[in-house]
Length: 128
Image (tube, rainbow, N blue to C red; front, side):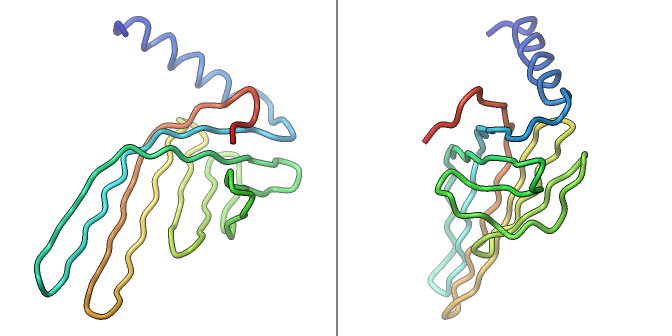
């Protein structure tokens, strides 16, 4: 994709996100996920692309992931949505469409840290 095409696609996506709130918005987010494991036997890490899909219900001020399991929403305003589920904390920047998430757990002396970030785009219909 040329720089000009990328710019046009970005402008269309941002314009779509800036439209007046609809009852439901379906978002598809492509992210890069990094998993780091620190154990007595040594440290490892891996990186992969990850797709996260969720639905925003403006009227109910809720967020639901594609598996129909809602997270706990801790902030829902016109700029940010913050939520957590299964010890993963999500931040969605509604102004630029970016999604970040992180988690850290320790069990039996092994610490697993997950961080991820990416861009979201509004989908015209839900994808499962």
